[in-house]
Amino acid sequence: MKKEQSVLAHLVSILALPFNVTVLIPLLLLIFFDYRFLWGLSLPYTIILLMLGTISIIVGLGMLISTIAQFAKRGKGTLAPWNPPQRLVITGLYRYTRNPMISGVVFVLIGEVVVAGSWLLLIWLLLFATVNYIYFIVAEEPALEKKFGPDYVEYKKNVPRVFPRRKPWSPGKK
Image 1 (cartoon, helix red, strand yellow):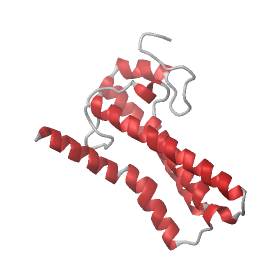
Image 2 (spheres, one colour; image 1 turned 30 degrees about the vertical axis):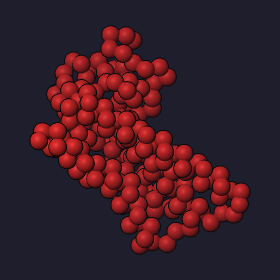
Image 3 (cartoon, rainbow, N blue to C red; image 1 turned 90 degrees about the vertical axis):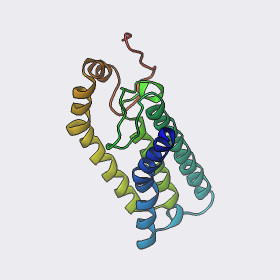
Image 4 (tube, one colour; image 1 turned 60 degrees about the horizontal axis):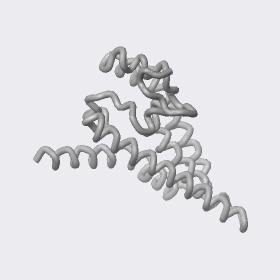
């Protein structure tokens, strides 16, 4: 029963958070407002944009899947604030940047902007990224310092918030 609850908790958190941000909200924006697919450009530009957008979406989805798996396996929690990881996750993509999950969402949104050719999706992307960046500084990082103490402080000193390190960080190494 516990494993079923864990799977359900992850499913609910995925549907409530990244699904809403990357699928539901963009879809509603595109349905209710006019847009021009691939910016209304002609060949060969449309093929290039379609390829770039698709690559961005695939990279973003890969990052999301990887980080959600790390939260489940290492952190013993979900991406949702109501069921957060119980242990500090500093493995996988978290060795390069402190927020690879949000980076994954941003890559998906960038891909959607490129493919859909929508200024509204671009505004949504910028709004989402700005609000999350402010949230990291104001709420998330102080809460993680309080919860995980010196381990998080060391991690924070060595791993950048947004732009990734060149080489993966390992605790005890500079």
